[in-house]
Image (cartoon, rainbow, N blue to C red; front, side, top):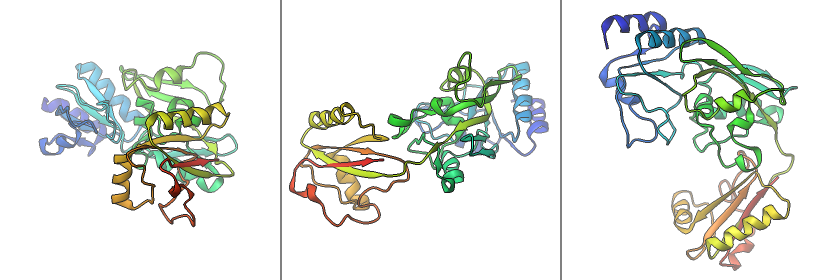
Length: 309
């Protein structure tokens, strides 16, 4: 990249410019490591105004750019473009507002998913979308990919919990989509933006909906001799009008791996499959912290463990 372009980027983000080849390797891919492209530079703005200035310069100089969150995605969403730059939102990591009466939280895109729940948990709330990487993935990346998680069965994906967005468009202009009302009249513009994988712009502020924790949580574990039996049990649960927060399935190999790693106390399915409905992210698995006093499922080859709230 030309030195005068780098100087202009440096004037915008200061020390938030990475151009050394040895440092750029960190940004050549996301969690999908099969594909790698070395960016010409990485910029780490700290404000909406800096994001706008960077994007305007890219637009003027016809420099392609890709926005990046924590880089944990497995779909190549943060893969750089040839002869382009990466705009990392990692430094925009503030929780700007917590409005408990309205069940709203306003965050910057670099805020880590699990930090939202951590901020409101003491008041009995949580942020429902829970990707498996929630301890490290960012809200901005979740918005770009419409991330889900185990609890999307009951609570929905990211799009269900995004009420409004501040977005920098590809020409550097700023727009606001949606509003703080849960049922805002008009077109669902946030719904169009969420999941667009950065093709429509860069989110610089996000208004999130949080939900109350369930009053009661129960977990059940069930083992089966076949995936057909496990699937029939899932259908039966839903058909009976019970909607668990999550239902996950483990095959025998996964059970063996879990036992070898953390000794969770899962039953031996004899090669069968295990289905596990759960209720919410913070509820503990049987056997993770302490084994239950009795294990009635030991008498059966099939085993079920369910978490109900």
